[in-house]
Amino acid sequence: MAEAERIIGTPDGDDETAEPAEQPKGRRRILALFTVAVVAYLLDLISKIIVVEKLEHHAPIEIIGDLLRFEAVRNPGAAFGMGEAFTIIFTFIAASVIVVIIRLARKLYSLPWAIALGLLLGGALGNLTDRIFRSPGVFEGAVVDFIAPAHFAVFNLADSAIVCGGILIVLLSFKGLDPDGTVHKD
Image (cartoon, rainbow, N blue to C red; front, top):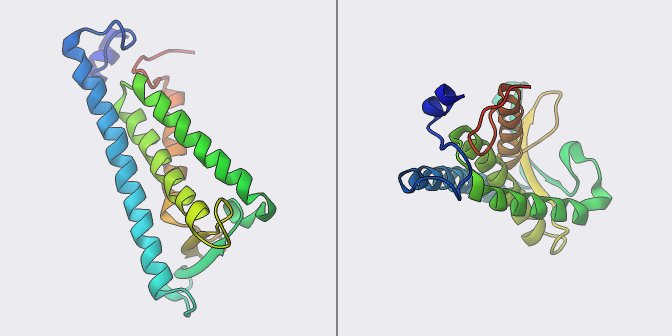
């Protein structure tokens, strides 16, 4: 365990007992989390602004023949367009995820977890922004999706960030790495 902590550079114990020299590492992990979140959020926001301005109400753009195209779609539901009648519930779920990640950030001492949670946070913020500010109204807005692979659902960069963050969390859990930087064996 000491070897794993040396490799990933995490303190031994929680943030209340960490030595002063180790405190900046926790702050760097929090900075990494919020940097990843801001980058994911801005990429999603900018891409949606471009899609709404240039692609909505226009023919789809083929990127790789029939395999991939950009097509503006408004999605009031969850993944794959399911749950259109529950838009407000998805809004509150996204807001809850954001609150949980921000609260967890205080105990974060793992860079891989910071990246994973940053992706989740940025993606959740991206789709929550659509839910709040897009029509038909506050907390009921439709998410702008535009990446349309053949034989698959249309999605956006926020969805991609959420899925990548989720996959990374599953991998970290299988490896036994906790957000506080400790490694456990089950």
